[in-house]
Each structure stands twice: as C-alpha cells, then as structure tokens.
Length: 102
Length: 378
Image 1 (cartoon, one colour):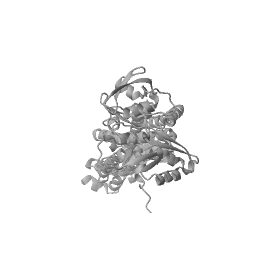
Image 2: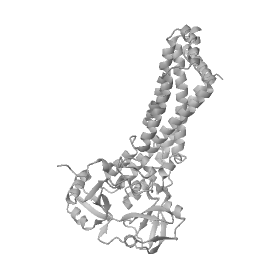
Image 3: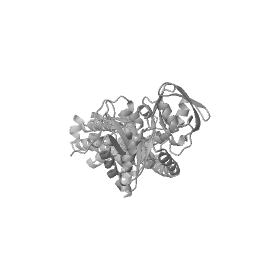
Image 4: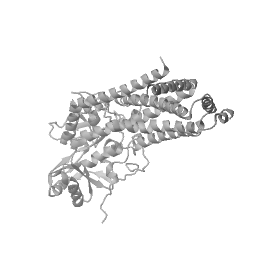
C-alpha cells in the first residue's frame, strides 16, 4: 500500500469517527431529554438556583447568590482562596451597579 | 484531473517519507500539537455542555429572589418584608425560602440544608442527596447526627435519598422540615433566608425587581435571567480556565509559528535546494510544504478532538476533576450530556489547523524562491 493511501485512510477514518461522534451525541442528547425534564422539575419544586459543582465555599456552591464585594470573595480581582476560583468567573450580579446613579 | 490527483498523491508519498526521515522531531510535534487540540477541545466541550445543561434545567428557578443585605453580606430577611412586596402591583405570589449551610466535622464536608415546599416531612426526618449518602455512608432508614446552633446533638432519620441522576443539582442537599430547620439553626419564626417572588406578567420581572429594591433599599433582587446569565458568563471563553488554556494554546502556537517563520533547518533548506535542482517547480515545493502542514495538523486535530470527546463525556472529565473538586470533600458524580455543535468543531479547526498550515508555507515559499545553488552552498 502506498503511503498516501495510508494517510488518506487515516484522514477518512478520522472524518468518519467525527461524524459518528456527532450522530452519537445527537442521540444521547435526545435520549437524555426526559432526564432534563426531571431535573428541571427538581429545580422548580425545590426552588433551586444553582448547580452543585463545587461545595468548597458558599460562593462556589451558589454562584448566582454570592455576596457583593466581600473580602477575598466574589470580586473579579479579589485574591481567591479556593482552587475552583481559577475556573469560574465573576457572577452576573457583580457586573451590574448596586444602585441607580441619579 | 486524474493526472493532477496522481501528482498530489506522489507529493504526499514524498512528504510522508520526508517527515518519517525526521521522525523523532515530527512525532514529538504531533504529540504536543495533539495535546494542544485536546486541552482546547476538552475545555470547549466541558463548558458548552455545562452551559447548556444549566440553561435547560435552571429555567425552573425562582423568577425573583429577594435577599436582605447587612454590611455587604446576605442576612436573614424578616417575613414582614413579604407584605411590602405583595403590595407591589404585578406581584402574583411571595414565598419564603429557608435554606443554609451546615459544616459537618465528621464528614468534613459542607451540606446545603433546604426546606422543601409541599413535602411532608416530620421534624426529625430528612431526605439527603446521593453525595451525602456516599460520603457519610448513610442510607434510607439510618440516622444522621447533626449539632444544633447551641451545640446539642440531634438525630435526624433519613426518609429517602435523592435520585443520583440529579446529583449535579442535589448532591449536597439535605431536605428538612421548617420546624427542624429552625430548631437546628435557631432561626426565629419571623425570619426567612430569602423570599421568592412570582410575577403575573413575565415581561415585567426586571421592573418588579427594581420596584422591590426601591421599596426595600437594604435588599437585593436576583432575577432568573441573571441566574441563567451567570452560568453563561462563568463558563464563557473570558472566564478562568478558558482564558488560561486559551493563552497556553496561543503561546504554543506562537512558538510553533515562530519556529517555522524563523526559517527552515539547514537540512530542510538543502532538501528544497536539491528538489529545485532536479527540476521541482516552486509551486511543487509549496504544495509539498502545504501537505506537510496539513498532515501534521489534521492528524493532531482528529486525534485531539476524539480524545477530548471521550475525556469529557466518557471519562467524566478526569483531568479537570482536581480543579473542580478543589478542597471539596463532597463532590457530585455526574456525567455530562454531549452537547456538541459544528460551530465548536469549526472554531477549534480555525484556531488550530489553519495557523499551523499557514505558518509552514511562508518560510518554505521564501526558501523555494531562492536560487538552488545559493541554498545548497549555505
């Protein structure tokens, strides 16, 4: 077999695998829809506000409920104490002003 | 047409042989390049899947949450504030929420305690998340010993375990009755953790939120839209690990591009000189270099993307786990749903394959346009 044939086979295999990933992802997402429905129901019935991604600090447990400008917490430039702070950015509530300026 | 295809195949044959002659360097390049695509792809798949999942399941979050602030910190809100909010036109219902955190020195983990609405729980009964069950090795029918605010131990009986499927939401949750909650934390019957507000006309949510803050200046109102946007923003490309990995990848590409643009190695230049001397056209050499870049970058791209997909959706993002876990003892076990789109793959392709392929052609073009005699003598 020529080297070019081997390379083209490899690229063809890669394209096929990528296509298979897309198809598989599509079907898994569709199959998980009832699960999402179930989770959305849990959120609604319990009145939840956040995903439980990290439990190491309260502002990482409830990202959308964190304090405003508390020392070492939540501020975009505050020195962060916890490793999760290197992954997540400041919550939306921090980017709006506290009060309306008259 | 067939002749042209045959020519390209010959060039690919030659390029592969040429790459194989410098196999050590090229294999190392392939590994590093694959790792760059893998890390970028992993972050992209991970953040997109989390963003989509949050957007779908948090749609049921309360429309407005009203929290009292004292000295910049969240405080208990008097139930009387609910009356003030109810008086605002357009408000459909105001409910109090009781929730808080409990640090368990035995499990060395933080739990979220919450009083569910419409769930029949006795004072000493609780329902716990799957994560707590795993960490404390407690199951249905067992008792969980907690300490009240004044140090007295209380035994709470586990009525049930929340479904492991919803661990991404409820891993650290303890559902408890209102009386049990107040007894545990010493919260008086006149206070709540915060208030949730339902609005008649959903288009007026932000207006009502502004009116609430106007009536209760010491409170803040968090709207559902803000909650959803928080998850959209925290996993945005500008945030934390995304920018760190992007910066790393961009730097890696700068090194690649600099290495390539700084010129070819003496051996590569001699090869070009010889090829030109034996009759190769400048266009042929450029095509050879184009294939060289394409072979390396496409191979790395496919390997990197496929590995990233399996890493995130089938290996539970193992490499990100230490960062996500951080200092948490209680960590949810979850498998993300593969939300991937052609757009993501296209972005990844343009970030990785195109710059490298272009970077290989420019110095080759410079070398290929010089007289072969000059190249071979240098």
